Image (cartoon, rainbow, N blue to C red):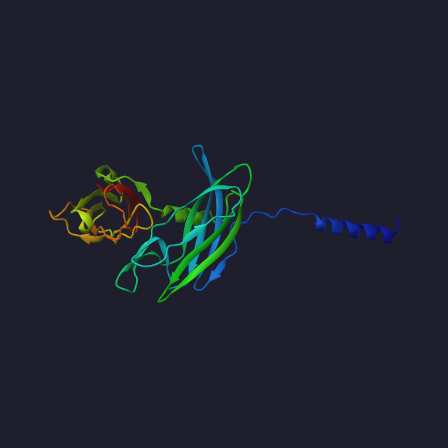
Length: 291
């Protein structure tokens, strides 16, 4: 074999190696999608197991510039909640969106909005249609970013999910830890808990009725109470602190709100309301039937 012939074949071999397709490794995060005063991306983590159920761990991370905010699933007196559309995802049976405990802030018009002042991760629990195959997540995120003015944001995000332990695992774990834990109302929930909904009852009838909620919490702990109706078209007002008529029990806060903001044709009797109590150290969610 001549030297020229050998070099020729070596060059062909190098080109062939370069052209061999190689599967792209799954990434821990998608690229950032930047908007005015904010950016969003998908982050992914390991497959988690609970009994017979497996799900893929992921999250939508939203970064906000200082002084800007975005909204919770129920924005309060004003604001626009984020929406997430997972159409186009591959090998995905279902996606559950979890919402970390939000904050209350002035909306600039005399009311209060509910949302996030700083960066936030919305954890996702993704169930694959076929757990033996890889999944891909596609998300169309729409959200509002507000400072003195509000600007709309939209992000089209995509990420292949490996289900392996990833660098963003601590970030996902921290976001999940701030998701309100779901409990039931009643005195038993005060045992060994930081927060508890002791009682929910209704006073008055008709459109002028109000709801009274007693929340147990350590005396020196600030607490906010949020309420949502059974469907997103309910626009109940924010509960406000009130003094118990009988002086109350130590460590119990009373909140009230009027039964305003019901959609046309809706009735309060028997409605399932969702109460979220938030403190700096704890957050709980309670669903209670309004009788």
